[in-house]
Image 1 (cartoon, rainbow, N blue to C red):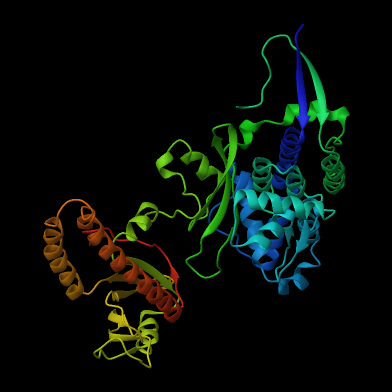
Image 2 (cartoon, rainbow, N blue to C red):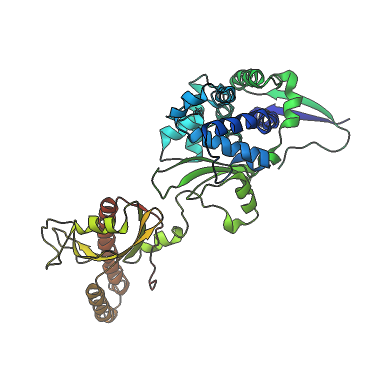
Length: 472
């Protein structure tokens, strides 16, 4: 009879633990914890939260209801704790939310805490340089240097990004190639290859969970290798997606996500930013529609190829968002703009010169040196739900463009008439040199103008749209 060796390593063990935990935890969340959350929300007049439902809580109506109630209580102010403290339902929810299963409880002025696990500390320490490799490495270091035995902390000790993403998705409410059997008659031999530190911390997790919920998760020992092997299934973590953090509390907010997706060698972690909150349910739906899959970091929609194209053409377009109203934004800009005078190359008391109205502006920077490629900055200001949206376009002065065109039309034929030999490269090199000087001088000034506008409007770049030749 053939023998199949079933190796229970860190990944298999942790995915097995995750599946065993999820199955038991869902039963409590659909039952006693949901009843407790309902009672506390009713007693405190807290309205369940709307919006996207993360993690496995979208699987059925009861889990969704529990998620919405808990999210609302997590965002309720700590001033309600005096009223809630007498409720046995609240004390039960507080015991669960404060359990070391999810890391060190952090209240941050709220009624219920969120767990600060090694992954959360890694996110805190590395912002804004969030990448899969860096976060996996720093989370491992934070876990190693602590006695944390949270579910996510155990994943951090494994230094496995796929496990880290999968288990963080499991704990999303409390924390801030499929494995299979060979068909036929096969004897199985189980090998326990779990790192000692992972098994030791996991024993604390299992003991705490069993005590908190009166459950019987098996101890993480070689005797239970078969249980964890049977529970582990990479097919069940396929497509899990979890939001890890965001870049700013001020709209527009970009959310940073990790998702478990198919790769060239099995499952891999795909990280991406989005102005929308992505859930597991939504991400799984898009895996079959690549054109709808969220974009990776540093490549926001409509900005990848065009950013490189922008550097070849003296034009720049930006969309800013600010919490200022259109009137406030126009007033702030007007304070930095003086009437147009000649020449622009002079000392001035303001940042720009030109004209500003309540809904538009036509300006250029005042500079103390000579640069013929200074951009003309035009923009419109319009109201939106968060304040104002400001569309900005920068381009060369029409006068400069005409001079460049005349020079090229006159110079190229002249260079073409030079004798062959040492001068044959000039017809190409000279226009290329002039164009390089033009775009370098333009983008040097355009970057300064953009920074000045962001400061004046107290804005963020919402959607860079970089112009190509002929774009409107």
